[in-house]
Length: 297
Image (cartoon, rainbow, N blue to C red; front, side, top):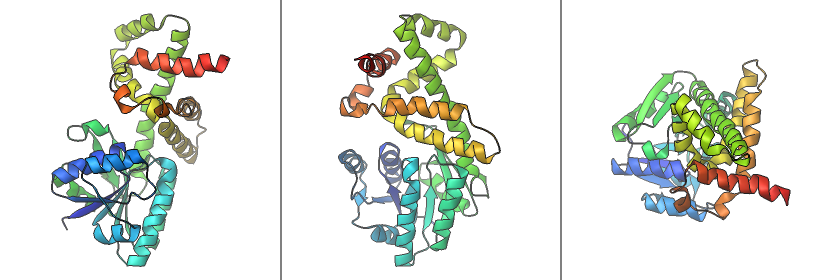
C-alpha cells in the first residue's frame, strides 16, 4: 500500500530534513509538537509539517510513524506510540531510526508488537544536508519490506535483512568509527592547540592522512552542538559490544570525551549561523577556552 501521510517524531535537524524530502514528493507529514522546543517548532514550520494535538490523532492519521530522536528518548517515544495504537486499534507501521543498540531495538519492537503494531528496525547513515544525494536508510526485520516504498518518495533505502537488530547493529558499528574518530581527533587537536602546534600538525596529517583531515573539516564544525547526542550513541555501542561477549574500551572513552563537549551547552552562546562559518581552528579555540582556560579559573 502506498502511504499518503507519515508521522515524524521529532522534527529536529534530521527529522525536519526528512519531512522536507517526503513533502516535496507528495506525502503529508505530521507530528506532535506539544512539549517540544521552539527550535523544533520552527524547523517543523519550515518543512511544512502539520502539528496534531495528540498521539492518538497522529497514529490514526498516519500510514507510517518515524522515530528520529536522541537515543535516550527512543523507548519513551515508542511507548507513547504503542499506547496510542492500543487506544485507536490501528496496527501502525513504526520505524525506529535512532542510534540504539540491537537490544534496545528488540525491546522497542516487542512493545510495538504487543500493541498490534508492525515494527521496523532502522538507521540512518549520512548527514541531513545530503538526504537527496547520499544519506541512506538501512532497515531490517520481518516488516522492513513495507518501508521500501519510501524509495518512491525521495529516500535512499536499503534492506539489510529480515531480523530486528541488524539495522541498529549496523548503525552502532558504523557510528563507532565516525564518533570515535571525532573524539580522538578532538582530544589530539586540543592538545596540539594548547602546545601551539595545531596548524603544523593538521598540515602533517593532511600530507599523511588527507581523508582524515577531510573528515575533520566536514565534521568538526558540527561537533559542538551534537557531541551530547553522539555520547549517547557511544553508550549504546558499549552495550552492543558487551552483548557480543567483548569488553568495550574505546567506546566508553569516546563517550566521556564527547560528553565533556556536550556538557558545555554551547548552543546557549552560539547559533546555527555561527556553526555555518566555523572551521577546525574556530572549533578548537572555542573548546580550548571552555575546557582548559575556564577550568583553570
